[in-house]
Length: 268
Image (cartoon, rainbow, N blue to C red):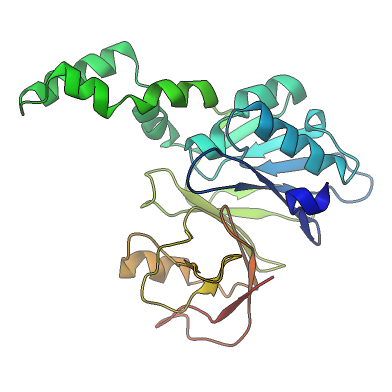
């Protein structure tokens, strides 16, 4: 099963990919295993809300003697379907707490607007000649999204700089809006690992050195879209390993100047 799922372990960090049904392919959830004598099992991102994704997560955890029911803390990098989709089901099964950025409802409301929000959208777009029929066609995807996306209110809303108390593995929340308003990455200072979510994306190259993903024809960008300010913020940390939501984790392979460029990297 490990080979089929391509589950990988990096010390206390375990990568569990699950299928999304989207063109992006699999999405990576990450588990932070508890230290000896602890039951603090932490999950970062969930996969879509499908039975196939649920089975993949359960099987991946099973490789290490855990079940979804054992999750104590669920951290979200952002509110997109493939990261937040089965949070409600996970919380119902495990009783875990869910933490995500304070702007997460901006994304949720775009995917699954309330009736009042939808009425406002329709009224606004009519001013530009967008008929209800065209609106329905443009947003037809929302019906599909509703089948694989069951968001919920987080138990804690995070802001830039918040510290997350994971036993012997404290994380810092870094707000990196761009991919979406609430996108965050999580930084682990002792091991110099960064859970980078979709702040790094395959098939997007920002004109800076980047790592090859599992598919050698693709490259992993440091930012998308390209902005110097986002790269400067992102590259303030001397990372030993980037842990992205899509593609393979990659490690730093050479020294580099944080002020001017991003590091040479290699898949791991």
